[in-house]
Length: 522
Ligand code: XMP
Image (cartoon, rainbow, N blue to C red; front, side):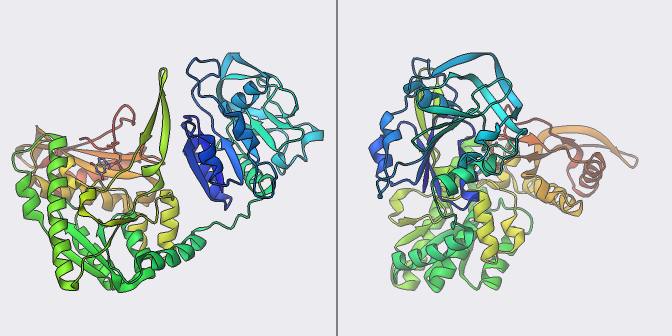
């Protein structure tokens, strides 16, 4: 495995993904983690990420020299690759000179590789003159002892380096971003050629080992899983079903806030297609009653969350009665980005953020957790879903928030407003599919506004609500851009919504990016 030490770069997760794409398992750890803990993981290689600091900042995270002296079981040194800040901190502790560049360098640069270093293992297969992506303030101006230059760019005379005796490498540019033409090749060179990893990690090998591991862990006990119909819980159900068959029991709660058709589709898929033990509980009235009179977004979330826990607990008790034993495990589709501990630098202090999203179920329920995807990224889970025959309508589904349509109705949630926003949402999604645009956007939604506007239909004046449409492109939901949907498609969708959905007489399109906006309106 390859360990990625995070110095706070916005690109750290991309490094892990590129290494995985090379077929090598990788993990991210915060730079504050002690070296002996990292050593205990027996890494085949270490990558030091970029970061927002300058090595001269008072609060700059320091590289522990011991990290450059790790050895593998056979006594050989563990290879290290420093990227941007990672390179600068390697150079800094070895006596090199790091300086603020006269101008900070962001964007494309041309990588020049002299003939004599072209065959270096790190640069194999990378032609002279390819594009690399720079994003830095400081750069290296003098090499520390023992290092040689492998490549340069116009503004960075030291763009790639290696140590002459030890397998220590560094690059000033960012090989992990797609704008660096041969970045994936460089990271693959590091993982396969320099670290000697095998490159055998794949979704198929993951399924094979997880199925065995889950069988062993679960034994003859029972497992429950809260199915939402989203990608993560659906693929987790398919994986567990493959591993333990009838010992898996899924609970699917209708909170009354689902999209059009979802309640039936999830049941058809998991009962019909997979023949799983699916307990579908229609608790719509309980949720909608709990939401009466509430218009604060966080209060909506709290009430929905609490009602979910009550319904889920009651259903689990009923299941235990039927089985004559209590399920020992609770399975969840938690993903790697939910559990990564990432570092962030706020002025002089470094904070560690954990993003653990517990899916709304408290620990007191007393189950042992099964989280087979806690080391995976979403696209990897999608690939596994395809392998496991989960229908593409589920595998490629847009993310949908737990509180559902409730946070897409501004103000109080009523049955009538739900019907209105659900109908508008269904038309928007239908039109995206009809125009082959569904898979091009990360998420698309309709929001019902508590604002009424004047319109005219036929000879009649109308005074109805406004609906806002929002579609965004994103890779992880953390940042997003509004989707540049074709005007004709938007016009047609708006027209259909105003004509077909009672209670809406105007539609608008939201062109705010995130940040500063969020994807949802509440
Ligand atoms: P925002 O609106 O924060 O959303 O830009 C980012 C992503 O998270 C989803 N989201 C939620 N998911 N419970 C969830 O399970 C929530 O309360 C919630 N709020 C937002 C949102 O749909 C988007 O994919």
